[in-house]
Image 1 (tube, rainbow, N blue to C red):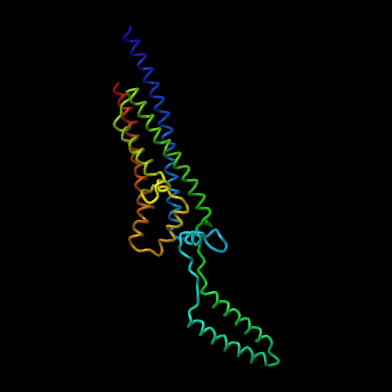
Image 2 (image 1 turned 90 degrees about the horizontal axis):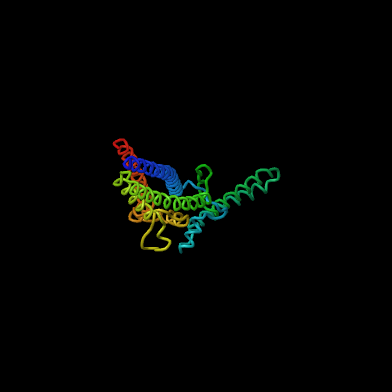
Length: 275
């Protein structure tokens, strides 16, 4: 009689632990999807800025130029060389002489106006320098959109990553207390998720020049992309190591943690079938 009561109590207790594990498993899966999407959006923002397909958000000067000026690099001004000035002067003088001759003729006012307008256009074009190619923006996205997106994604990443790691910890405690099994898998999943959180956090804000996290600020991204164009192979290698390879490491850690937690769930089901 006492044996049956103890077995019934143990069954009820195991059922309670299984229900708690099911709740944590559901929350863990939701947080995994949020983290996965946030990481993908973050990397997409990086490649959009790196590929230079984002419109500047300022009418006069782009944000990249402003950040370069703040970092001590003056913006480049286009100036005409001395030879170009001489050629421009000679060509303008010849065109003006032709315009005066046409103006001297009494019955040709229309040609005079056309020549003068042509002279003005040439002078303006030469003084202004060669026209810059208009960038074809991707889906009409500008730097302001990228900046807000990166800030929002950083907020989501911090909250979701910490909650994901805590969920793994609580799942480990439930498995230990309820003797549900799969302790090996859930322990590995918790350690991997903890390592992912450590690598993800933006340590460069507090320990600048010592260590950096996968998360980056908009200013850091814009400044690095601006300097990328004029640097050598070593800088470019560290650039991709910082913004892509590092991100790829955290991405795979998240995948591995989720795989280990899935194996933990399968181990629980196998043990319940045996029992």
